[in-house]
Length: 560
Image 1 (tube, helix red, strand yellow):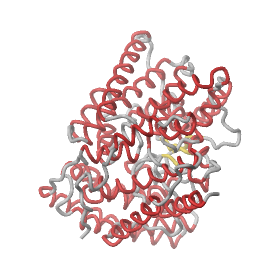
Image 2 (cartoon, one colour):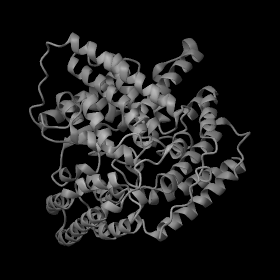
Image 3 (spheres, one colour):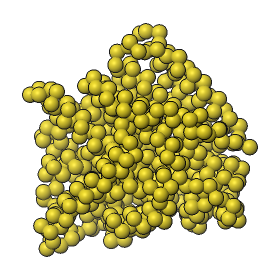
Image 4 (spheres, helix red, strand yellow):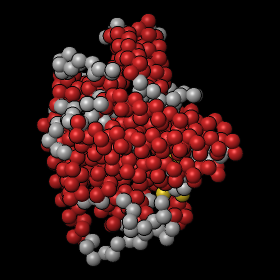
């Protein structure tokens, strides 16, 4: 191993260890990180100053590496670390959710608790202790929120935080009361006290936000230059904002046209029945998941190892249900528990379920071909022999693979026996295309939260609750909404070019197996490594240009 390659491995190891302690929590299930033993969130002024110092040291160490003449895979690893460093810089200095988004502190205070509830019982002593300890952190984290948000927060994001806080204390109390019987006696008693203190802190935070709302005038948008930094320095996308918008509009029109044709063809078919109850849905989903794995193999799409973990439905636990507004109700496990089956917790089937959950209650396969792909792809990536390829960098790769999988299953005629399910898949394609317009509109300040939610409600259409949830999430996480389509488009190009290059020797199952194993790696880098084609890497660098903190004219955000 060359000296610089060895240094890269050490820097990467150090960085990801640090990242496990400092990465912000969010609603998203793909970005969840395995925390070190005894970890507690800290967004105090001192913690932010320390983050800046350590990140600057990592960036300096990275800048000293010289892998110009190294094999392409080593250069890709160096670029991956650069992407990860850029993401940390983006979060801390450009997006600045810790300064402008009151919802951010609900995530940092409550999502760690939610994540601890996702693994199935029993609640061993360590996990039970951590739940109580994180409840005790809630008052301090919300005090840190008040310190950082004063005079800096965005009014629209504050209004959404107030919507959530209207029932947050009651929901937390209901959830912890349901958890109480699962804990040992001593821990159950501590849970009651810690929950009461956390509820009091949530009420106080709500009252403080309500009082200070008139003073919160910061924009929801991070601005065009900051967005450009994310698109090209973090996500390594080779497309300009204008190109992305055109792609979204073209995909929306294509999906809308396909949906119209399907609806006309099947207009006289009645809506299929919902599962009789959760138990029936769980049993059907288990059978469907195994059938789809066989389908993937027999159709020559991808050959998943027999020992690869499964993706299952499970009944929604009573201690989790009141808190599902905090995160996707999936247990995705982690690299150190990579053999654990991934679980999606489901509610009783009913017509009142939101957009995605109702579709899965009609046909669990529509969930398997997206969330199941996430479960399989993440487990394959966790097995990667190169430790640097096991980590999340940006959503375009992971979400692109799942979105591509949906269309691939549709084209492979998986849903020929269920026109209603085929219609949903096409409608979801329309949603993901519309997310590009919504994501860019929010990030550039062209759409308000209300306008974004209204657009999703009208043009998908979807229920208003899900639409508001999506709009608020995209406002706080620019670039995530457009990741589905941009990833899928890059896969289509990579697949076509690889098939052209390899000719008769091309096998789609080999291509897909590699794609999923490398599923954390941005596709511009996958193209470089697989085809020796640097065009997308160079395009991203050219579009990113000099869009660093100094070029943006942004000083470090003050912390006190």
